[in-house]
Length: 479
Image (cartoon, rainbow, N blue to C red; front, side):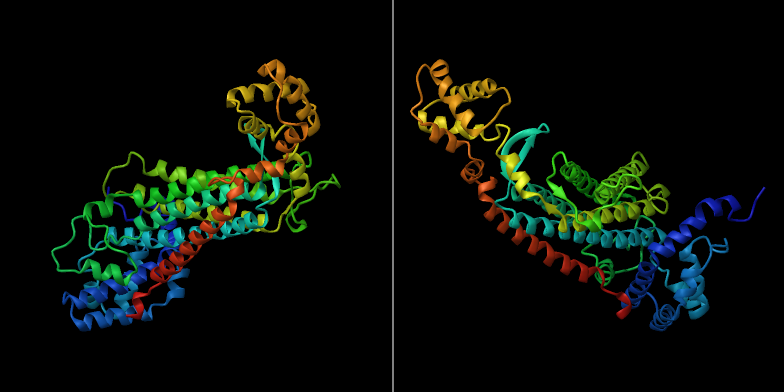
């Protein structure tokens, strides 16, 4: 038995949601496509000039507030047909009907998704760039601030806070590159693919792409409709960014623990306890962590929704998945902005960091290196001697005791005494000297060059962002 479209439950569970999402996410982009396509059709002589003028005038006169506040009532299937009805009333059915020549909702919708996704990619990139800028400034400020480096969560060797922060700044630099690549994939025009095989009309795909700020075509018309890698590449870039952010935040939370005490948040970022008067809870960092986890989960959901679906025009990769993509980008942006704000105003407890850098046997690698350079030992023999001295002290470290134990055990372990004096051995255990000796590229003693290179890269990304932002905010309606 035939029923009237749409079935109430279908309207309630699907179409009304899609209508609201289209109003919220794609309305302006849809109008831009209408303007650009109409201009192209007239330019190609596919529709008469008077029809083009009537359609463009109708687009200008659309009641945008009325459209954006409309509530879905089932009279029209979606926002596209709702707007088409308004254009027909303003331009006349004949003129408005010509606007739809040589296109389909298929290529229009994919274009809408790409136009929104490219903006989101740029906004995330701006936030990544802002966070990286904070870290570069802090790296420069703390280029010589001693701190312990950890491996396997255990104290390992001295480094500097600047060296540590630059490690994450470099990760963010790679995040920038991944987001730039994702933008390049997204910003290709599918328009002209029509349903999936293009059209017999002599349209100019390159012209309309240029009007809308696309940097070329998604060439193959089948792939322009069927492929979803423009979404998954963005999701992959977001997921990678959030995974790295979470690792960094985990360290910062550990540093806030008074047992370590490397980081103290500005009072504006600290929440108190309702029962414990002493508490200084670093809650914003916890929020940054969960927001990053949310964005990562949402990125994984994008992959799950597109996985094992047919390679063609299918709703699995259209209306219902798109809001998830933009929820993902919103969560990622919140995490990035929050972390940048917290870190920019945090206080690093540099004296405590330096104290830990010179404790717990962290400098004994350099003692072994000094034995190699000055005593002519193989590194393995030097390592055995220093290791024996560490075991001899049984966790009770001081520079003097470590130097004495090394000198004392040398005859037993090497078969001879050391030529180095106790003062020489003690000098090899200095944390500052440890760091300053490590001047090869990438080391804590070579940080100035690394920061300068990162600053240059940062300037290039900022210029790229300005160029691409101007490109995607280009308006076809200015014609």
